[in-house]
Image (cartoon, rainbow, N blue to C red; front, side, top):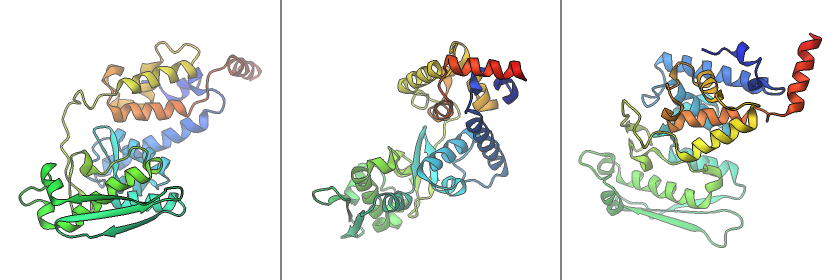
Length: 276
């Protein structure tokens, strides 16, 4: 296995990249230790999932432990509770206003508006919508707490329209097929033992990684396995093409944290080694 010290002697750790590498090392260690404690939500099974959630939280300005409690990764896509979605919109969008309207056991409407919008946007979610989506199950939360479930589903739908820049493609667990409580806690999160085709990294992620490798290394060929082993450690798949979407996101975020390769940087490093 490649070590941090050995990688530091290659273009992987060019000038200015050590801080990013150190941060990754700390976050990886934290994720690994937290998973071992058994105190995280049951949906977080691996260190990669924990790390992806922590990175998502960092991008959203959410502290690590709060992110681990409120963010879930389902099939490679980050999800958050609708209450957290709403809180982020209120915090990040000055002048953001919202209102729940006509909430009952059969229907709920959520309306929101931000500066620059000509008029407020509203989304309604009904119990008939829940039935068509297969959410109204015998003994399920839509039978026990219909008003609350409809309220937050309407809110999530509306917030995606009004503030896509804040949520950057993040969804609620329910929108991706998880069964949740009235508070948004995941009750059932099917997790395949082996990554299915839908879970593997996308062609877009593949092209992004290829472009980043070309930008970061003098000789990008063969660096994929080295980076993958360093970043994912014991969880790295045998072949790069077998990475999941969540793992690919972790690798992409790491590569983006490195400085681009330049001949000047390489010459400078050689001069520093010679002077030492």
